Amino acid sequence: MTALTSYSTGTVSVADGGTVVTGAGVIWNDGSAKPGDILQIGNFQSLISDVGAGAELTIPPWGGGAQAGAAYKIWHVSPQRFAGAEAMSTVSKLVTALSAREIPVVVGDDETVPDPSLGEEDQTAIQPSTGKVWVMSGGVWTFLGIYRGFNLTGAYNGVTTYSVGDVQTTAGTSYVWINPTPGAGHPAPDPTYWQIVASKGDTGATGATGAGYGGTSTTSLTIGTGPKPFTTQAGLAYQDGARVRATATAGAAGWLEGVVTYSGTALTITSDKASGSGTGTAWNFNVVGEAGAGDVSSANNGTEYNAATFAANLGLVRYGAAQSLTAPQKSQARTNIGMSDGHLPGIASNTAASSGEVGEVISASGTSGSLSSGVTANLGSISLTAGDWDISAQVQFNTGGGTTSTDYVVSISATSASVAAPYGTSLAIHERVPSMADHGAGFTIPPTQALVNATTSFYLNAQAVYSGTAVTATWSIRARRMR
Image (cartoon, rainbow, N blue to C red; front, side, top):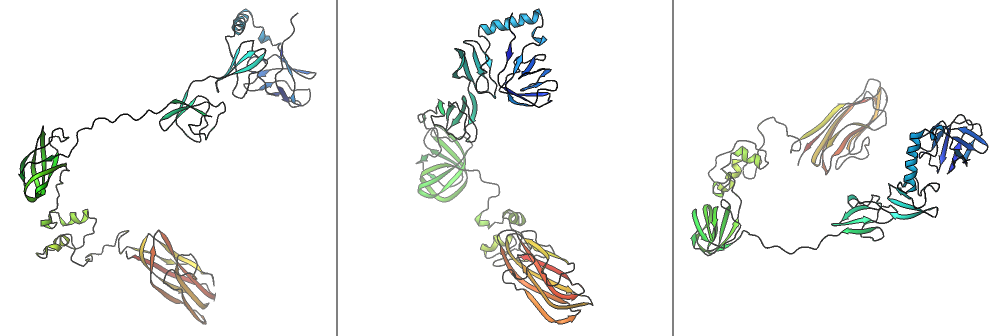
């Protein structure tokens, strides 16, 4: 008779009375275990009712005591292994293929070598995730190498983990990872990890020089407007309709410019703009931009522009109407945009200065709750953007009939709730009075300069020393931008 076959690779663990058996180093999803097979650990056996997708078996409650990392056997007695003629035909084909070594053993991602219980002589085993290949030789799996296609990964990245076959590019050259151990942080061209696939080629020969602008002429022509025909070099880059300036280098001082027509050695500028005078006998040519429609002439002192539009284009705030002056002309342009020599006119309306403008005002005010005697409080604050500011404040301490006061202190500070650190040139204002009932006090802190290079908060701090009825404070803090 033929003896029963079994499977026993790896170890198993199961709790006392447990129904789940966990395997380590096992391969059960290839048919090594089927529902209906018998699991044996020591002298105890149990029927396998299900085979999980991972390394798990389901059994009836285990009566052989808790087992951990134990040796085992799976007896191949499941009825599923004897399923009739069609199944036997399929098995026969599979056996034929295995005998011919046509079907390789597949090695899982979590395995380092093929299962030693599998394979026939000369059969191969592969691990798809790494491209590793083994062959069964003399009953032992022998590693042949790594065989996989290129995996293009783009430009090299120092934090990417590369494996055999990964291709990256560095400075125009492509490299393939050749080290069997995956790794990161190994830039090319380190030969321990990389082999050149294709290198950047040498710089090619310099091509022929193309047509350029420039050019010269020795045609004698008078500086001015109208058609100006020149004889120059052939092969220049000028196109009909381009705007070209001819600058005199001999015979005259100045230039003329306009739209050009050009063919062979004939270059004609239809001049509509010129500077200087005389007859030039030598010229240089250059392409120039088209003049805008709003050219300002020095002779007109800027009167070509509408005064309000001109001021807006210069980023100026225009106050007051333009005046008509006849002399001196040097002041005319400034007058046209609402300015006069040496003065900045004020506004003639009640419009407040906008944010960021000189004269901008930022303020805050209110009435505090009860102040704790001898404890400095932050009454309120304002936030100032970078610039030059004047800050001032007012505080009125309010008392009731049952209040006996002795000290009042106020200050402006960049520190909240501190009268000991007044800002800049300001002082902490302190009034001490003989202890008396119902004594309030009012304080005005004169403007102090605040030069800040970033947004800064300024606090109005106050302290009252008293007994009896609580003291409150009505307050305001204000800043005006000076620059």
